[in-house]
Each structure stands twice: as structure tokens, then as C-alpha cells.
Image 1 (cartoon, rainbow, N blue to C red):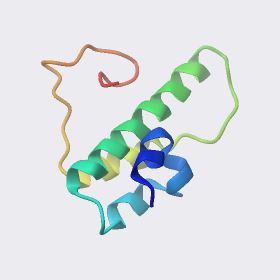
Image 2 (cartoon, one colour; image 1 turned 90 degrees about the horizontal axis):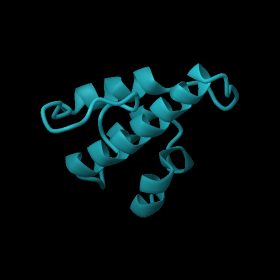
Image 3 (cartoon, rainbow, N blue to C red; image 1 turned 180 degrees about the horizontal axis):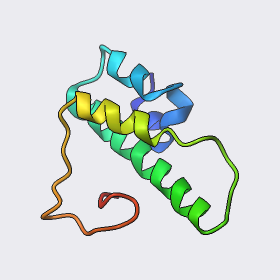
Image 4 (cartoon, rainbow, N blue to C red; image 1 turned 90 degrees about the vertical axis):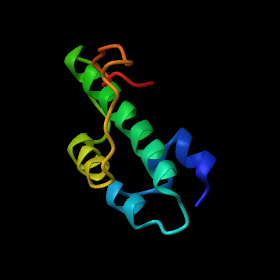
Length: 89
């Protein structure tokens, strides 16, 4: 598993968010970082669909959020601006 490649495109290294949770060579923080990137990408696709720019793979957002929840990851909403992408970039 190439961490840098996974940060650029999580779907290129993992078939689903659950695969990240099973990864034993990564720290909790690395898993969260990759899942947050994947979450941002999934939200970007949803925004595009809202703007009638359909196409692409089905959204995995609910699976990504479930994986983040299993890692007890929370977004700091007090220090993140509200955006359609979830407040983090």
C-alpha cells in the first residue's frame, strides 16, 4: 500500500472504506486522513450531481462516514467553515 498514492486517490488503493480499517500497517491517524480525503472526494461528486453534472461511480459517502465513526473521528466544526464538502479540505 502506497500511503502517498492513497492520499491522492483513496479508491486507487482501496476497493472500499472497510479495507482501510483492516489495514494493519497504518496508524489510526493515517486511516482517518485517507478516509477524510475520500469523504471530501465523495462530497465533491455529490455537489457535482446537484449541479446536474452526473456520471461517475456511485457514492460511497455513507460507507466512508461509517468507517470514520468506527475510528471515533469527529470534525472540529468550531474551526472548520461550513461547506458542502463537510468543512474540511
